[in-house]
Image 1 (tube, rainbow over the protein chains, first blue to last red):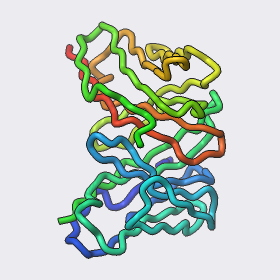
Image 2 (cartoon, each protein chain N blue to C red):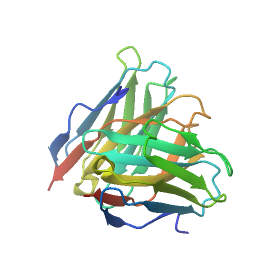
Image 3 (tube, chains in turn yellow, cyan):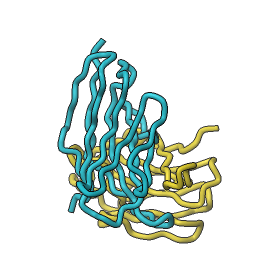
Amino acid sequence: NAGVTQTPKFQVLKTGQSMTLQCAQDMNHNSMYWYRQDPGMGLRLIYYSASEGTTDKGEVPNGYNVSRLNKREFSLRLESAAPSQTSVYFCATRDRGVSGANVLTFGAGSRLTVL
Amino acid sequence: DQQVKQNSPSLSVQEGRISILNCDYTNSMFDYFLWYKKYPAEGPTFLISISSIKDKNEDGRFTVFLNKSAKHLSLHIVPSQPGDSAVYFCAASWGWNNNDMRFGAGTRLTVKP
């Protein structure tokens, strides 16, 4: 039971290059998310998908696109990378905890550096 | 607009003592508050949550206190253990189907043996 798996773990890009971060879950959750973590900023939501076939913008969507390929997979694409997109990216799924709170399960993260 | 704030970037405590991590929020619509723990090179993991209709939730060594009038919550760890050394994120959400959970910047806890 892998939970949430992200690839790649590390990537270095040059400004203007494109790349796709992959995320897959085996938890059978409907909702999936992409966050970025920057020093002093906490985690900020980039895009989310409430169910297969739907995607919506979060707090910081500019410069990114997403695809919800099926229930298991949710990818994040940078079409033309910029140094401001240097960050650690986390994919997550959502479930309802016993207390009623929405609980996120995160992948291990993908560290992206844009030169 | 940072709706969830953790004003202490770091905290250091002695093993066996109490750790108190603090979090403030501005949005009165939040109805659930959560704490996540993060080790290096790993994703955050859920630790404990509290509903806005409660003022305390306890799970083993971890207790979260909520003061709605002050828009403040805290996480108490008693007794602290070296394995508790990690970054702790405070998070808040509103509406069970709302997908926008807000996170604080995190507090790095170091528990010294």
